[in-house]
Image (cartoon, rainbow, N blue to C red; front, side, top):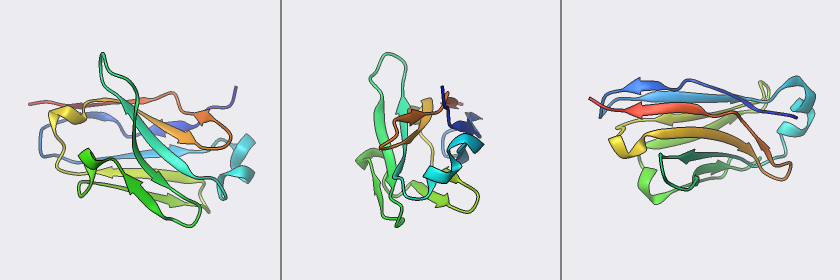
Length: 116
């Protein structure tokens, strides 16, 4: 089973920042560049929700709850997609997942906890 590889989660105080990175494994690097990539998150007891997307042409879209605070970017040469998160709030707590649209590839998830 192919899995994207996320990193960068952790514990941060409210108002702090974190940067998540997702890398495509070697088996699928050839398919990375033309695909829209996304970050989802799932808070305890809640459904998984879409946080941000970035197309192959680097058009981006964000959930209303994170607009102005989160920035999604990609590096096609390194086959990575990142999520820069600023001004974090306790409501941002959850497991964050990377997703490759079209191929339906997910990562294993990385925990983000925003707490004082």
